[in-house]
Image (cartoon, rainbow, N blue to C red; front, top):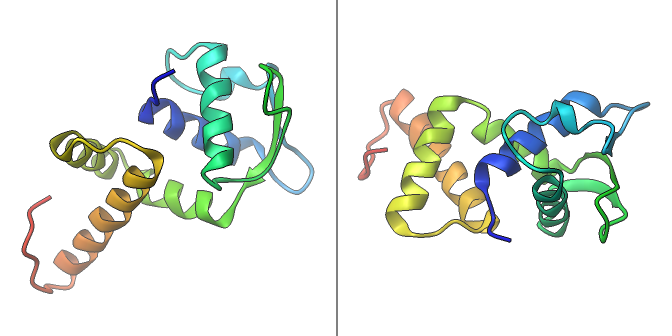
Length: 131
């Protein structure tokens, strides 16, 4: 299955919304929280990819459509914080498309760099790239 960055982002947002010290994300029960037109299979695939990329704290049942996510990892929280804004997310996707890199690792790096450039711009620090 091809990685869909929009599905990854929607899943991370849903996991963050549901998970706390007493609650976890469970599929298929919580699939309705993943906004967008994604199949159960697509969400399960992306959950496994998020886990393998270190974006989830704990993930159970990695080989089935039924899975549980305990929470986002610190890396998952950081990545989601970087891509939460629609404007930033659209910039990340634009850069990803322009350079032809769409792996989770590449998108995470792009998101971090987009945010870094925005911070530099905010503080008037010179930048050599336009986002």
